[in-house]
Image 1 (cartoon, rainbow, N blue to C red):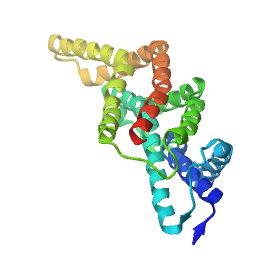
Image 2: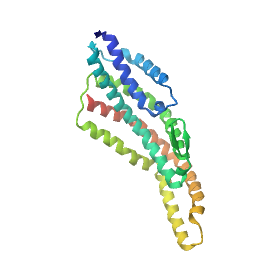
Image 3: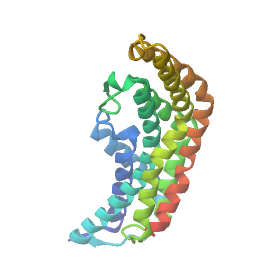
Image 4: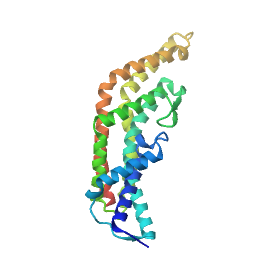
Length: 253
């Protein structure tokens, strides 16, 4: 059974868009309904339909299924790159929470559908605010539209450097996370050293009980002052996502 040309084109566009949206942290939460995700993907697909090069051809049902899987792979690869940018910010919050001791006090975050600390939740909200402030969502839509120019519908090639690039993207999480949390991490390390010296000088003092509130106070003070550095740096990470997506598309075309 052959499927019409325009139907084929729209189906392939829709599945690529849907795969990208499914991995973006803003929409991957379980609190966002599947109907909304599919509807949003449908609207975006209709918006860019006329701008997508007409390289698709008629498929019978079996080759169309293969082409759909290819589009899903492309979409998930692009969504993975975007997700890694958010993961770097979450990693910074996780490291800070671990050092301050707040990692033991966790609550259910409905946006992430996981138990997180106060610092992690704060970093999550900060990442979302910065993402929209720097218009990174516009860059993502533009990169999505451009992906159809770089990688024709139903056709892509996996080059050997692709997997190395994906590993490189994943490896950036820890480096970027440490850079974002560097001011708090460095100051807390100094506090740990000072508390260690006090423990040697005054053995009667319970350093764990006395030091925990001090570390929490210091972490929040330094965190508030470091926002002037962290926010522009987080913005630069999101602005660099478009460059990484374009590099990914060259490895798939």
